[in-house]
Length: 297
Image 1 (cartoon, rainbow, N blue to C red):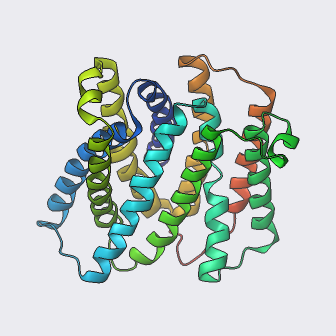
Image 2 (image 1 turned 45 degrees about the vertical axis):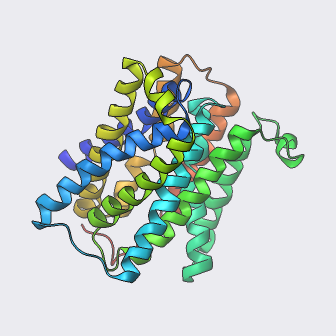
């Protein structure tokens, strides 16, 4: 019961990151936000790695290259597009689009690792994509077919693709490294890249303009959505298996839409509700095939 409670709270933390991110992205540049969030997260995660192992594990050349690739995709590219996208579209809509990530990961796993999708998972992939199209087009699918999606939607879709790449690379990396080490080191790598980009993008100006509420949002995203969220999610994976853990996390877009309505006064439209329902159903089907050797009862 305690594990499931932590997973539901983690879903709330991750949903809240869309609200906090939307607020701060209206005031600061995307590279500055991402750098501040992950520089602090890197310090905390490295402290956790050192506490867990008694030292910071050394990586060989192959592992170093893999960690750099993880940092480039899941930290640098994802977050640069995430915060820029949030400055252009609503937080609720962004959360529903990003919730299609499992569908793209399933397709990537089939293409690069030869995993069998099957009709059930394929139906989930198609439902997720349809749901995202409904959200992007605000219910008018002809807009998507005509290439009418805006820049904000395109950036959030870029987040989905970068996260899929991060997850696929992570499948191979975590055969040799623990999730804590892989994520901790990849966040360090991504933070360095984000820091360089932030300096060229006016980091000093952003720091001088940041309000107390901006800093509070960044600390929230760092401590709760990144560090605690990561730790609790992987505790859940260890205790009840990845499929069951993911079923709780699948409700992130639902919580995000509700929180965006409550705190940001974003409208609950029919197209948003329909798109979220399609994406949620598709994600459930995509994750519904159990993998006995990965599950822990």
